[in-house]
Image (cartoon, rainbow, N blue to C red):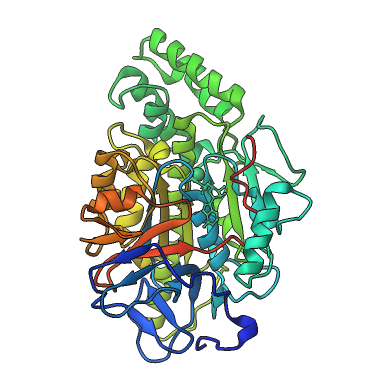
Length: 465
Ligand SMILES: Nc1ncnc2c1ncn2[C@@H]1O[C@H](COP(=O)(O)OP(=O)(O)O)[C@@H](O)[C@H]1O
Ligand SMILES: [Mg+2]
């Protein structure tokens, strides 16, 4: 589908001029003259402009050719690892919403999607603010009012995701009546994760009890109570100190009371039907538990889609018909406040699982979107796979260095802001307003300053919780 030039489908001319004048020319950028569009995340070939989501408008003028006001799009065909950085309030969660709106099935057709085949997504919602994606903004809510005005200015219509599912852990305050309970199956948690969760080394006496118990229960769909019963049975432990068994029993019993685990807990396969966006509202969980939930999701996605693609490859090699079991070809996993679930300096279940996910997820059709206000706090092995960056305002030099290090193209050497010259890229990042960011990808010769579009669904970031 080529880009539209119909005026009813054109976005508003919201950027006629800009205070940001970049001095470095844009030597290479994926530009489509028809309709004045730039594309990030893929190299354009021919007239194929399908599967692009609308992110906003180019906000800079440049020496030589200027693209100010051009509409900016992001590819959704390839599996990406997208890294969004910025201080609190700079627009990171907002971007996550923009991306999810762009890839999801919407209630009404919208020009923010150019020939998009909807993609299944899962949001690790550490602040519990994405439930609003399923709702259009309403003018009765003061915080939505300015959003609606912005949408009008951009010539966009309010919209909502056609299919969302919200999960929250047992005991969390439910805001909607439709939330589902998020529980994990104890059998989906690895022995080393159980050990870490209970503060034990794998090769300690208590770690050994956990491993032996899991091994004994392997192949069954078991509950935490089954683990406790197995540990309580003396005949299973002729050579193990009772004190170690008692200690692990107390700790597991604490977990039993949180109800986070159940043999009927989440089967990640159930999140993969119908191009739905599943939102895991985890605000009320401890950080270790947020990390564990993320690990189970990432690992299961990798297993399920990995097998699916292998099967597809085999059947196509032997030219057999492929019988789909409904598993989608692509999934996006979106993680807000990613430093909370995968910090660099502490071992965590999600850290290990996400390293695997980004390293081998590409072949399995898996994308990852990470947002963080602490770019220096995320594991390097995860970040080494980043191919698209959204760099919002940051203040501290160490964070700026960490964020800039991951930009997959050149940064900007020289820029004028309202006539004053800036020659340090860090200073350029310091002056950005909310919703403005440098977008970096491998298909452009340098990072480009972009104004992110308004959200078409209600944005929950303003809410008091
Ligand atoms: N693209 C944008 N357009 C308009 N307002 C925005 C945009 N991005 C962010 N904002 C404003 O900034 C606020 C903070 O954004 P948010 O994404 O929640 O920040 P954080 O970086 O902390 O996740 C939002 O509630 C919204 O009011
Ligand atoms: Mg946020």
